[in-house]
Length: 434
Image 1 (cartoon, helix red, strand yellow):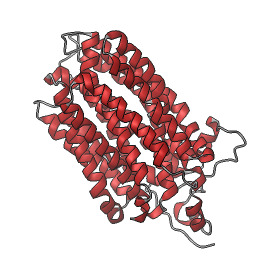
Image 2 (image 1 turned 90 degrees about the vertical axis):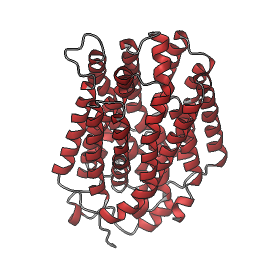
Image 3 (image 1 turned 180 degrees about the vertical axis):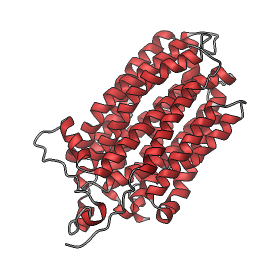
Image 4 (image 1 turned 30 degrees about the horizontal axis):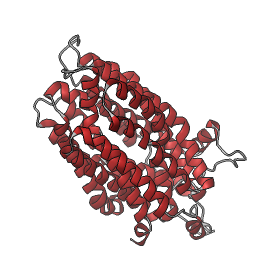
């Protein structure tokens, strides 16, 4: 598709960014436990420290991401992409210099701050950039390709972590993060804010009340440089589809955050996994996700539609999490990770549905709102799942079920799937000339 050719430099930036970010994941669990609880496979302090980091970062992301998205509508996507792509470099440099307890605490403090500007903003701005460049009928596939490129960065970073010594992992990661920021500033072109697509669509209404049964959401005219929370709620409240999307994103993100925060500590305590085994597991999941989004999704979206594909992804995500929670042998997590091949459909489908419900000059705000909802879920998730994880991985567990907190995350995912199939289906938008 010619549309995707215009996104080459964005895909390169996304690949390098995620290559750097995910390279450290297989190593950070071992580094944290070794610094805080040397010689042990279980460490409640490490679990709580990760939970606090996730909650504080989520709180900051909830506030920052919608603002950054809205500012990108005004000042440009490239200008605002500089913020997340440079902020991730500093915490990586800290652990590149050393991995003592002092360095670790400094890393987490700085990462909390940088994560507020990078965790949600990179995704939000990338999606808005794609929406500026790609027409609506191809947008779901384009979002899937963007997610697939990010997953390819995840796979490549995981492969690098698998073979790099821990001492060099953070040095390489910091270097790649710096290269990605420089590449973005030099090669990425600013968008026109969707003006070219707006010319094509200016003669037709955004949605047809006859088929959709809802009024088209429109942001109030903002005289301020940044929107208020009331503006965000107004955008969601004016569209039934956006409200449904926000609810599904909340429960799915609640499940994902709880699952991801507990998974590596659970595998270390249950099966004594180390950095290399973490990398192997993540490599399978990342490879399945990249294959699915780059090759399967562009074919499946036109064939079965975004709504059905979303339900398939939610069901696969439930099975994925529940299977991890009851893993009875070391090979079960490897098998469970293959369910990612279907679970990765969730986010591109939701984001595509949302992007079609707002104007071109509101893409940053809309994507920022949805990302903010996901961040709110990541604030609540540690409050519920971190104590459960620490309790059931400790010697004082009420009963022997180390995967109990992961199973609870599975119930949250099941709730998202149930809501998806019980809510009235969103009718495909039909456009009419005026």
